[in-house]
Image 1 (cartoon, rainbow, N blue to C red):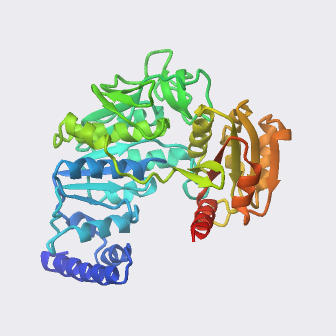
Image 2: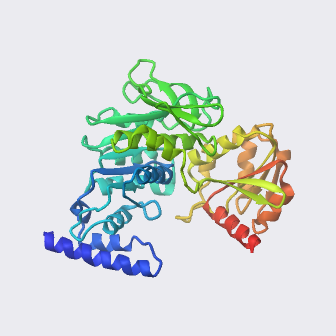
Image 3: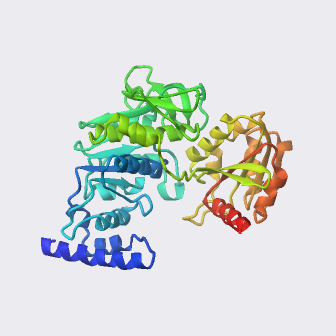
Length: 444
């Protein structure tokens, strides 16, 4: 495609993008049309000197939002697709929105949230300067199949020109650095008071990828993430220069900087650490300014929010179905909180993308943790309430504590009438939407 044709395609789709915005639509449609007109359109843009891609099973949106605020507070202009599509056409739409008609991106920084299955499609045409890989685990089997497929899709498309920013505590992620000849920076979390000596979920990498002996895990934070080494010393958690240390007050220290957190969820420390390390190694922001930005974040947390339902204090933990690591982190968080608790588990649909009835993912969730004595009651809600109950029975939960409500329509009254202590709502997207709608209706 010549320069004149490129300009025409970009100009046409930018006009379309503006028209859609007039109607209140932030759509990936301009990117779809641009790709149809020019299959290689992604390679035609001139990217800024700081172009960052973020991927992983969980944490993509949070890390992207954190990075945006760090750079913006430091005075840089930032282009980002956190509120839009993280697929190929969404990335094209992001570039269209922030570029001239000749394809030169006008912002100082690009932060691109990228679905892990679309890394290969985007990296085929453009390479970022920095690439954050936060984690990879079993997720959405109907779409992804085995997580090794996802790992290969990512690994095979990483070139040595990319500076990798990797979660050192996930052995699957560290494995990506073994044959990488370019720059690598790691972030990780030192053992905490919440860490366990035994696995609290299914392990996604149990054997050394070099000598194939079984890995020894020194501790687990959650899932496959923690400290690990090979008995033959062929593969072990790397030296982490930017290692975070959890403090007693819930804050954490990284690189000599103390960062406050709104909650002591360990996954949030990983997200913040990834943002800190990336901003620092990019050379654009000094450590004090990064720490200031992290301590003054204005992010709306998607996964964790608190509510008052009558006299009941409730915490909503948005947890993806068929993503065990997400669900396990929610249960882990609940068990780490003080006081009496009632846990509400429920969903009416397994997937918002596919019409499937597969509930095998529930057997990779560590419901055994709910044996905790501080949990007074467990309430199973929605169309799969009794399926959840069966899984709890296999987890040796005291079934005298368990009750069932297949109809989740009167959700708020169910919560009010069945809570002892603090209510923790572990809901996926469908039930979260229902809950939020009921809360809005209650306010009217």
